[in-house]
Length: 610
Ligand SMILES: *[C@@H]1O[C@H](CO)[C@@H](O)[C@H](O)[C@H]1NC(C)=O
Ligand SMILES: *[C@@H]1O[C@H](CO)[C@@H](O)[C@H](O)[C@H]1NC(C)=O
Ligand SMILES: *[C@@H]1O[C@H](CO)[C@@H](O)[C@H](O)[C@H]1NC(C)=O
Ligand SMILES: *[C@@H]1O[C@H](CO)[C@@H](O)[C@H](O)[C@H]1NC(C)=O
Image (cartoon, rainbow, N blue to C red):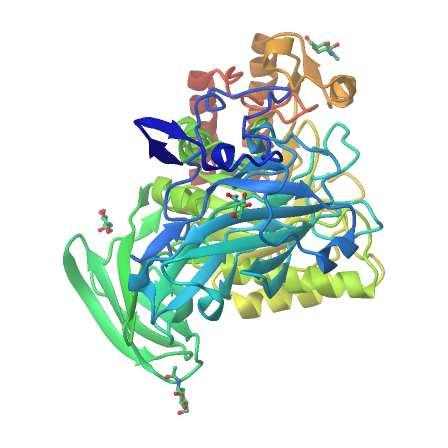
């Protein structure tokens, strides 16, 4: 825009170009939330990566341009220097209303933006960071292909330094290919499908998490592995861009005060102990700021001191938080939004769900076959909500090459998230989805996960085909729990006393609502009767919930039940079994009753100890 005689004219109108991109406007989704309206065009303004935070950064979120591409062949003719067809909000799922497109079958896409980089940044390395692009991204800067990333849930960075024009315009063009479950693809997708039905939902394609630039010295911190235990011991590896054995310094702060400081060598693990720490736990989620320095590069991070382990307490194998058994109770948390699908409308909306869980007394959330933006895990760390983190599943059995790619992405998952104090367990397979049943790969994968992260428990198989791998003996059963009991349903094996008894899923009772709170798509509405059980009113729903929680409590008292996951936080599309509806406008939970019942589970567990 520029001004002429006091009036503001769009530059393109003056230039008289006929083919202006269709301006951005949010499309009306089948259901809105209280956050849908008035979100504006400055989405996710927060620094996106709280555990490796640089002061010199620039968000590229906002209005970009989009063009559908017909096939993979389109990558041979990138639309450099062109105005594309439609404005689109980034980050977003192209299938969401908030994207401005609400696209369907957006298998191949071009996405572009222009940006300038301050002259001040000249002489430094310019890093272009993506929080997540679903599924495969080819990145072009000023006409140069600078990188390819595969995997819809994982962050990646491109060193853009040599492609950037300082103090001038730059063009960023991204080619995205996301087959979801089409084109014969067998890739990690979780609940996304091109063919939506009951428990499988609308897919997400494109740049669905933040994009940003930052300036750093040529030899900079490229990754940080940082964990801290209940005895104050910090374990650090500072990875550097050069891979050289440069000296690094790590300081731990409490408020404005440095309480510990240690030097070490980049790219090698080192340990040190901080005296008199306050432990992190769900009741008291104390976090400490950390500053890491490598040469001229300095990043801010944080950690929490806590230990997750397992041990035998009064004859039962239990999960331990800081050496003590406490009952772990959370919800199945899909992380879907009617207006943004995989991308929450904003940070406030995202933490709204977590705060409700915390207020009800849950101490855990099971992040179900999805990976969230880093700020979600930061919120769990701050609130004191433990996280059971699932690997996003494959829809069907993989061939050998697809399995290798699944394993590669499992490693990305663990490496990306292993610093968050709130994460207590990894899940490799959910209900047999994509689980090879002939060779039991979960044994090797469990060992691989333990190598990458020895500080967490591994739930190798949640539900269904348990062959004895990992730390948990997990049962899924609807609606009533069968937690750590001898009377397991098939095809799960009976409770294995060598491992921790967990009810990986139960509940799932439904209650239909009027169209104002429903995902208004007839095909999904017609799948509502597939719900395990539908109560005729909210009172009935709460009555049945109380009965199921009492049964769980009974199993905690009698058997070896150490943890459980209630299905689920919210309704999603054709599923009407949430603590609240998909739009978060109607809470089914009787909050007083639930708080009482959840506290009853914890007190039953305390009654088993000592
Ligand atoms: C980027 O610049 C090009 C060339 O001036 C223009 O055609 C295009 O519309 C711009 N893209 C965006 C997203 O503003
Ligand atoms: C890394 O070490 C090599 C060999 O000593 C040296 O040539 C190079 O300049 C170093 N790189 C950086 C970024 O310090
Ligand atoms: C960490 O640092 C931020 C400012 O950088 C400050 O707001 C926050 O209070 C600090 N947290 C702790 C636990 O000291
Ligand atoms: C659920 O409610 C919707 C809208 O109120 C209705 O169209 C649908 O038939 C109901 N389904 C069931 C199974 O009650």
